[in-house]
Image 1 (cartoon, one colour):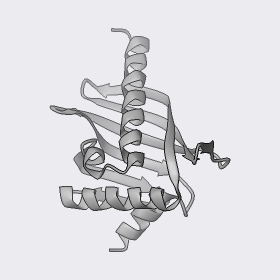
Image 2 (cartoon, rainbow, N blue to C red):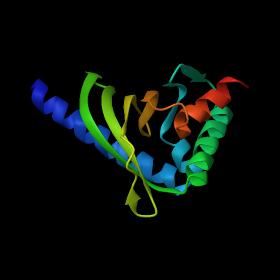
Image 3 (spheres, rainbow, N blue to C red):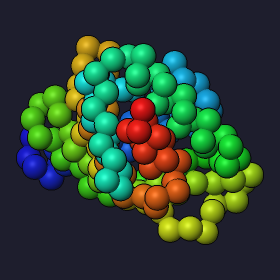
Image 4 (cartoon, one colour):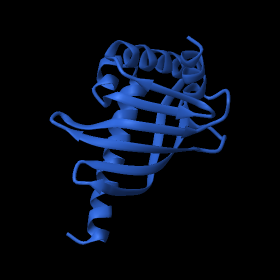
Amino acid sequence: MDKELMDQDARHIAQDFLDRQGAVTISGDVDATLDWCDIPCTLESAGQRVIVTEQAEMRSICSTFIDRLRSRRLTHMVRRCLVASYQDADTISATYETRYVRDGHLLTEDPYAGFVVLKRRETGWKISNMQFDVSSDSPANVTLRDRHSD
């Protein structure tokens, strides 16, 4: 398969992943959200870096993030994969942007940029590394900052 077709395939996989993972997260389903995460997993934003090595720790982070989304009454996470490529047969890296919707209205704030590394495992693609370029008060940054201070 040539590089262009491989990149199209990687982008399709990454977009599908972002859509489905975002939907279960915004729905509040912690168990389903955990199914999309690999262990170990590195999460980074605005100077915060957390390397998660245990399922219980990932559960806590996912649960806290979901609670922060709910506290802001966010109802949808709209993600768009910008670029994706295979790093090897079982690894895809992708850049994407995310916008939030509250009560059926797209929020006017700028989308935030993200970078994700997906690893293919027996049960499907999993987040191995995720980086967020977000404001200091965003749900992702606050979750990691609070976790970092534990």
